[in-house]
Image (cartoon, rainbow, N blue to C red):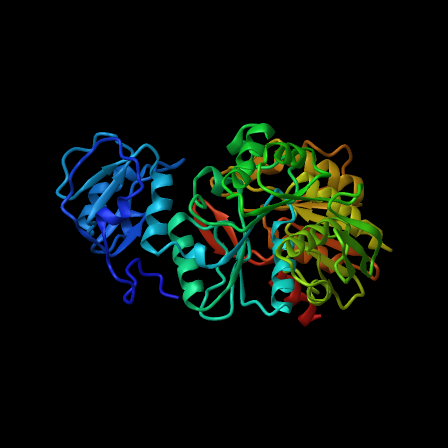
Length: 495
């Protein structure tokens, strides 16, 4: 899939066509330019592109307008700030992020209108639920793509690059354009609160949207839980009346979203008999077995996925499939065949007879559920390796330590994407949550993983949390190659 902003076989579009539907701060008659593409970054502008200047947390795109013009921009979309006279059309709008979404969708021909779009939002469970839904759709014979934390997962020339959970406005519409042209019929995508707040999916036509849960996360960005919930709720407020919402009624914020949603809703619950619920279930270390009831349909579940978190994820996935009208035997087949969710409770056996569990958990709620599940598997000592991301909510750091201490005999504290934050300061915040000296602090995550693997004995369990299948460490703006799983696999091969 080409990364160039200009797509050779896509016809140029008239500027005035792309602006139709945009509310401008002032009215201008523009000479109608031919637009070859859209860019949100001045350095990637190609000749004939529109450059959309967006004010971010660290950089303001308006400062880079001269660079965009120099690189061949044919028009500029800005927020109305005075940037002087330009030799090309300057379109002033109240919200350039929102404008970028519309212009990108118009440029690429509104591809989501010709796809069946499933959006999944929530704090935890998005990736697992999306993976289950894709497995069900593929069992039913639909050519399906998955977009989210794991990157783009689609058969064909689609690089599975792990970037944002939800792509930016232009990358998203371009990807949907390619998927539509490659005869994909369904797309299952994770929708982050940042994406909703930043209008990245404002012009994606979702057929179904699902809500998993809401627990403290991203409060550095949203400020408090009410604002975090408000951001998530935007997904359901943008849905047309023809869409369906699948919402977890066991979650207190799910209940709030239900009360504010005007489209048809399917509620899910493990504890009560909602629209979609378990008539019975069994949770064992070998997997999940049970029956899910939804209207007149019964869905027999037999999954090798473990833990209460997957009990919830399976329920949401079945709710989505039920809303789609997929026959129960395809639903059962899809869930049964989903034997692994990359980076989620992913298990490795070591030569010593120990077990390593890798999980992407990076919130207190996820720690509670993941470690609660792992603890039941342990016949020996449980060691937990974890850290906390930099430039993110600092309040959760000691809370995660307190939860790890509750389940583990030993904890190794390590860096985990410190970004521009001070790694030692992050570790100091984490350590505040311990009430006993059960931890060792490492400045090198790889060293901590190797040390823990060496100590692992028969029946012991090592839980490596926070990174999952990530293959980098983000330090001061640079993504340095690093993989927990690669270290684990190399250790097992060498020993």
